[in-house]
Length: 523
Image (cartoon, rainbow, N blue to C red; front, side, top):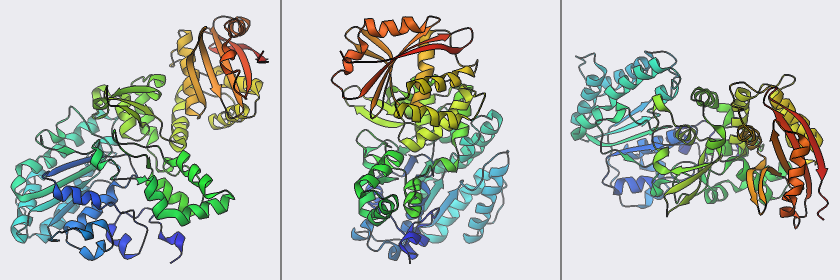
């Protein structure tokens, strides 16, 4: 088998993966933690395409007792009797649930298969009662308690975040199925549910008050995704191939993988995690691209953020306590929880003294995806495309062309949506900040100096831009303020070239009306 053929792109069946000698990052140490634990009900939330389905499949074959599949893996080295248990796997990741009733078809196909296998005489059409009968029958026929695995428990809910009627229909239907986890407890050995989100103030799990949510648990922080050590240990040849194709060093290839696909963190003490879907695709093709973005999802999130009128500057650069990230409430959606749980924000830092986490965009791939779907909601380019103007902004900043940078910025705000609040200077600064943050610029708002606060600073590898924005003022007033308060002095020991830019913004025309550029002489 060629090396490139061993990447299991889209393969989520552990048995097939092992039998075909595909690459597998050993996560079975987490199974040992589970079997040593006294917990019975587990819940794990992770973003889409993060390996949740593969971990469930690994659990499935472990509890089926198929030890041969685990040879050479961690779990094969521990003392365990490898008893075979009946496994019921409810996979809800098979449809989009665009209309009510689709879940009935998905469940019906599974229930019929289980009812035939465990010789159930179907006497009740109620979906909850049928599931209870199946669980009891599986226990009685095999003499072993049942293992229940639910893949993407929330898929019908996430797909209907902006459709309240559909959302409520599926919430009620799922609640009736999941209620059996408690009522049939005597027949159950373990339940493991995965999903993207943890919904609060919903009765999906109302009866299950002993659910062990391991989503933020330090012991399980690396259960999905790829750590840096796992990347190097398992994919060295792939990284070398990427380096050779791009004619760069191994270390530089690692750097590309890190800036594009790393940066996720799922607990206070968790490791930095790489997106497994993107890493596997990248190494298989030896090409950097936005693979996770191609799988969709951001448009639903963008629509939800727009509907709740989220303050993007606050959302993209914020701190909060961990509890703020745990639950989602459809009727009062918290944009932080929404973006964190779906993978568009992640934990960047944790202060153990205050129990406060700092959130940020994980990596370049996610930043590009957010800019692609969010910017068109807030700015309307009259000529050309948003993508084209973003390229112009980035290239002009990096090449030290402040005049082109400001003219491109003008193009963005010439078509700014009237839904974006522009009543004062602070809102305009925030709008510019959001734009620059989403395109990956190293921008800071209201940075302190000994003589005041700079409205906006932008730093690139070779250039520093100091921008003062006057709301309904003049560009000359703005530039004079930079000079009078000696804002550039802060950077005089820096070797980079400094540009000072004074700009005026009109509340009536909602555009940048004028700007003046001056190069700093560091005198």
